[in-house]
Amino acid sequence: MRALLIDADPSAAHAVARMLASSGIIADQTSSGEGALKLAQRGSYDVILLDPRLPDTDGYAVLARIHTAVDTPVLVLACSAQTQARALAAGAADCMVKPFERKDLAARLRALSQARHVGIPAAAD
Image (tube, rainbow, N blue to C red; front, side, top):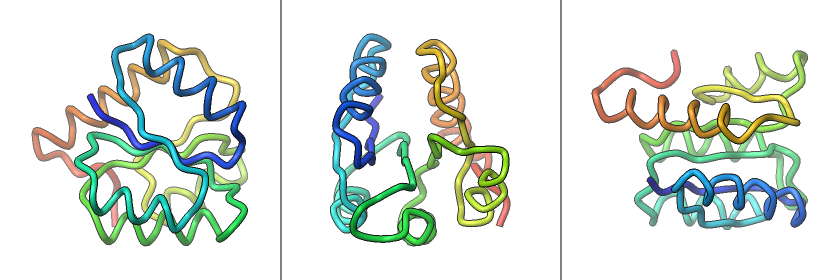
């Protein structure tokens, strides 16, 4: 499985990438919204992980643009209870609050990828 990891915090991105690698998920990483859009459109990802706190742009705007540009489910990381609705409204397929367990993250990513490949919509529009 291939994932795109969008996170502006290098230490957090490194920790998540290690979690993914230990679960057999290969992740490309970027820390910018514009970089994320380019990679999402060029890459062939099964899932996208996004921490919406980005330095160069509003992460929810990036999420909305990714949602309209590609048919790849996006899992938003670091959602608080207050921001889950905003993430889902912008096109997120799911949200996870940090901190999370590796096995839980891997299970959600696999479920999102499988739902995509069998034609189940990842998020309601």
